[in-house]
Length: 340
Image 1 (cartoon, rainbow, N blue to C red):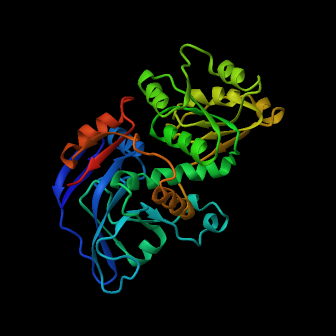
Image 2 (cartoon, rainbow, N blue to C red; image 1 turned 90 degrees about the vertical axis):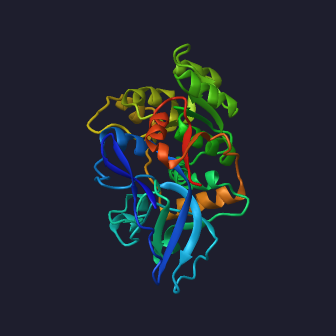
């Protein structure tokens, strides 16, 4: 099988690996679509402590079951599926404490999804596989994992119908957060984005937008909210310098979610009186628990919202390096690796 193997920063080589066998309890999935995640881009550009080369990147995917072992009962050949990149042990301190996204002993798939096939076993399937409906596109199915990450953060924010939510950053995860806040939670969403291309994309989704180069975002959102500020802020841009402004966007008693990943080793100064006197709550959201992945699958299958605009570029696996480069630019939303 054709596999894109990561050998260190700036180095990915296409290699021919043997197709995995199902064995007695195994499931072999032929990958149909794999999305490029921001983590894939960061790892390719500068490395990542979680991904030691040589390894196969990619973890947002959908595919078709092409082989099952004789003891497998959870799926059948021909099933259309998406699979979580990890499953939790369910017994560690964090799993038992209700924050399973912080599990300290996860099981991983046999390889990443920048490859033609992936193998998992029956136990893994029971805890991390979602069957896709016949009318769900491969691309929508591959968005289950990033959607699960958004659901984890949105759940902690407790967004209510009628809330005003500011999303800072209109990259792919910012747009997914905005879609969930608007279509699932019933919130009014305002997107703050400095890049003209991304702001235009947000406009095409029907969101209100603010250009911070033309108008002070804090003044803009206060003019929209009777001078209070927004009820919820989602910082979907991984820019440390944006944290203080995100805090200022919030009304007294509001919540600020730090959703975007930040570079290691950076710090930020914030006004503690925003937390003490104005009771602004500062939250963090990363990853997902099993219930978020299954909930995301339910939403994808129910066609709860339109994801058709989320994919901006498509490449075959042979062009993986080009795909990673495009995914790092503001012109892209989600970049899909499409397998024949």
